[in-house]
Length: 293
Image (cartoon, rainbow, N blue to C red; front, top):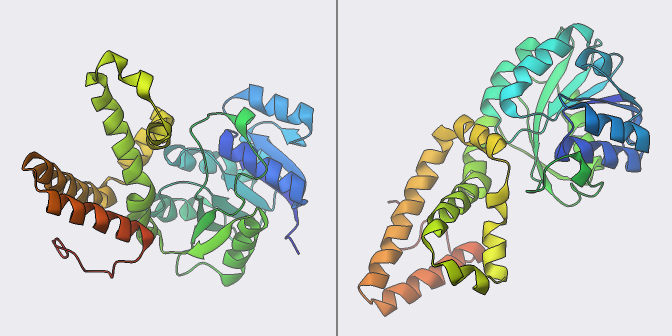
């Protein structure tokens, strides 16, 4: 049975915050859903359509809430939670959906009043289309959500937050905040870096090249349309964990470029075949020419 909260407060109302509201409404997870955001227009539209029951300031939104979701950029979370803290009820649960976890998990718990609990989370869902108008109730369906409790976090709080994200349709896994940041650097942040860099290089392509665009180009470049301010903040926040993935990619690209320029057909075939085996999960860990490099 889905957990039911008396009042859910969502602080930040873009694509993800709006989708949390829609999913929670559709699944009957909260008796009342309140929202606060720096932009008033999407809140008013959500209130008029019944997606939200209450809109207002951060303090007004969190008053009486037993679950608070921080749906703002990671860099904005301390200020938002600091403003909310004086109005938080005893025993309130606070979670988030930020793409980086080490820093929030270090700083946010200390901003909470006594008896409140913070349990970090990162639903691996989103899109390049911006704003609450693109929110979907099924955005989290079948997506992985990484819950990142601290060792001292009460088990009841972790279980409640995990059940909340599962009730939105997520497949919930647990990681430490540090492990999350390392793994997500490889799986999410590096692909965005590559798409952004390729799009820059594309400025040098012949003018007529865009007439030839197919599905491969569209699949690869879609994430390069992601919000620049948001992603600059993510990359800055996770720069330490991104260093190794970027270095390893540069080495692999250099190897392939050399094999192409030297017409080393056999090397190219082995490189491409190994790439497929890695993606398919059929290559044993630690194998390959550059293993351990």
